[in-house]
Image 1 (tube, helix red, strand yellow):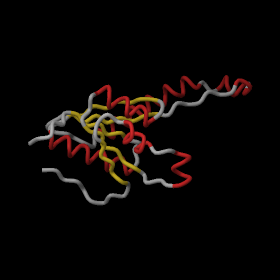
Image 2: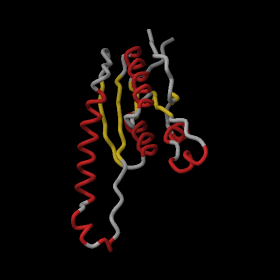
Image 3: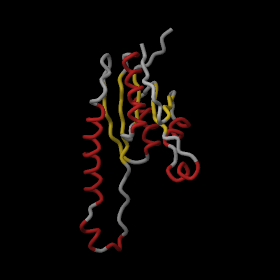
Image 4: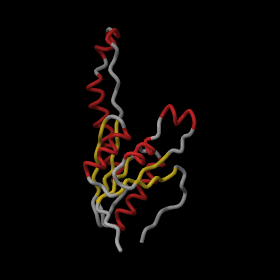
Length: 159
């Protein structure tokens, strides 16, 4: 029996852990002849308070956000070029806002069959402050989620 996997979502924050998880997602996409969708979510720049005077006139948050989207879009395309799902295809998507929420929403919108995501393994105060994107995705995603822990040394080979 073959598991029908047609689309795999691989979120990235460009860390080594997410490079490893994307490599795993790419291997799976090749094995299943599935589409690989690589996504990066850019945080939204908070607005300047109204009483900043001339600093607010010099810094335009909307322009800066637009520049961030362009920059990370180029980085995402370069990142994706490292992988080549030969039987399937690779597509990149850039989003802005909450990473966990955007990944879950994208999984729903794209109807993906699997999300492959890295975890940085933060615990305690670091996890409380930074949250866990992987945990949010596991809890709320409409499809199976494969979590790849940071520091995994072996290379996944799927035949």
